[in-house]
Amino acid sequence: MTDEQLQQWMERMSEVFFGHPFVHQARFNKRLQTTGGRYLLATHAIEMNHKYLDAYGEEYFEKIMKHELCHYHLHLQGKGYQHRDVDFKTMLRAVGGTRFCKRIETANDHQYECQTCHFIYHRKKQLNVVKYVCGKCKDRLKKITDK
Image (cartoon, rainbow, N blue to C red; front, side, top):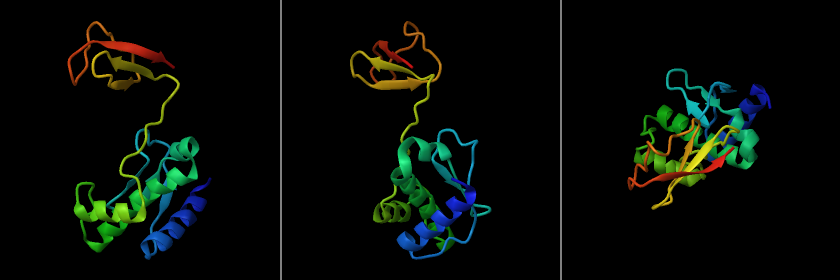
């Protein structure tokens, strides 16, 4: 998908779900690693992470687009556009956007599980399970996968 196609898609989503036009720039940003997208306050542009489209498909990607469009429209209207604001949470729920992005697993991820509370930790670097313990209950960790 190209930036032009993303721009058209964003404009359609804005009209259908928000009833207002999206008149600024939407583009892909290849440098985004751990976030699905971001709204830039200074330029009112929206940057999206192409990896989420590839990993989870169009339906989930639209939820991320709705999230960013909530920031966009609320900021332009002078309302609470930050994640903690009631206006943001209300609008996000109304349009069906996602509040948080799923994690994209990579080939070099390591997973560890607490032996007591069974919380799963995802890390890019290996941990020394003798040296590190669970941050929640302070019990021992065990490695469960090595992707």
